[in-house]
Length: 67
Image 1 (spheres, rainbow, N blue to C red):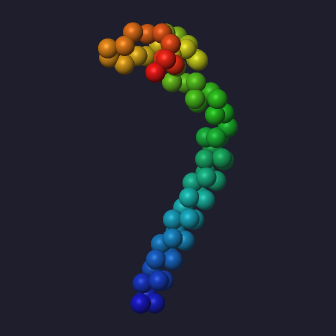
Image 2: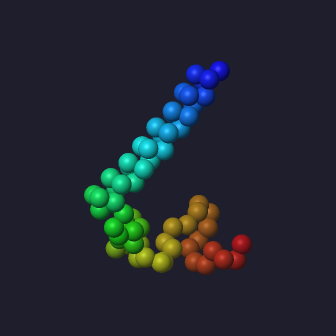
Image 3: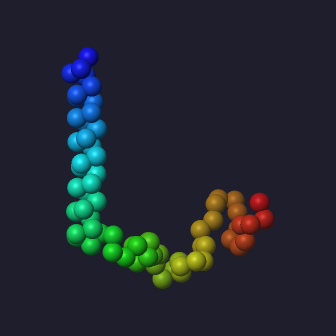
């Protein structure tokens, strides 16, 4: 039974260390430098930031707050 606990705790430690390593790698390579630019990168000129242009089938565009 002790071997099982060693394996479980070893696996948990390995997962934790790999998460810390991934975070350190991301910070060193600039992956977390500018969240706003990354969030805005999904928009193009046809869909300006802050304006909803998508709609569900059967609905017309406009204000969706009336539900």
